[in-house]
Amino acid sequence: MFAGFLEYSIPQRARKKGLLELELHNLRDYSANRYKSVDDYPYGGGAGMVMSIEPIDRCISALKAERPYDEVIFTSPDARVLDQPMANGLSMCKNIIILCGHYKGVDERVREHLVTMEISIGDYVLSGGELAAAVIADAVIRLVPGVLGDETSALSDSFQDGLLSPPVYTRPPEYKGWKVPDVLLGGNDRLKAEWRYEKAVERTRERRPSLLEGQDASRQ
Image 1 (cartoon, rainbow, N blue to C red):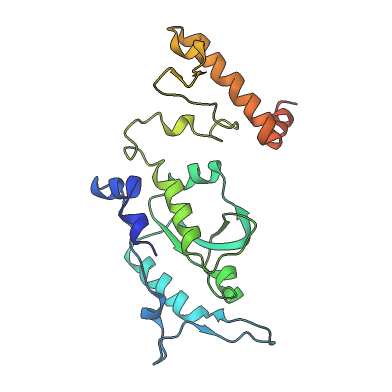
Image 2 (image 1 turned 30 degrees about the vertical axis):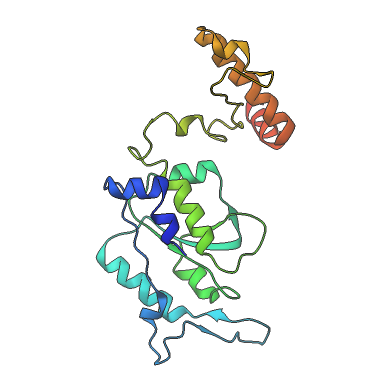
């Protein structure tokens, strides 16, 4: 499931530059039973299977024996939702473990004793945490210094300043009568910056007004 993600675009570029090491670990390799299973029926009954604590503990302990980790992250739909400030903070970490949730979840003792951080990518349920882990990794990897060609590119992304990004245009300046705003074609950088800020606020007010409410509250 991770092959395409790792071999494409920015993650691939980061690995080739030596700025990123990303290793995949199969929990079945840490299972102590002969069937190499990593799940079992839940105590108390109920539908679904639960990931067992033993192979997870064995895996995390083995990795921690090799190097220290800043965070051990568990992907779960009931966790705090990933946002840009969270990604910014994780980009400063040196080593991270991401544990992918699956089935009906993990034994609660994993969350109580082995995990340091839990992240959701939205209020919905996926078949497994692999896609969520890929989203988290991609959001973090692009912020690592040297990964993007233009170091300032990530700074102008949506949410970095609490606003959505303003509209962007490229050539040609006119197509089918649809024109690029004149201010972007001129040479006045101050006016361009003012236009971008005004449009960012306008777009945020239309699409994500809650972001502006947060800014307004912080100013009071």
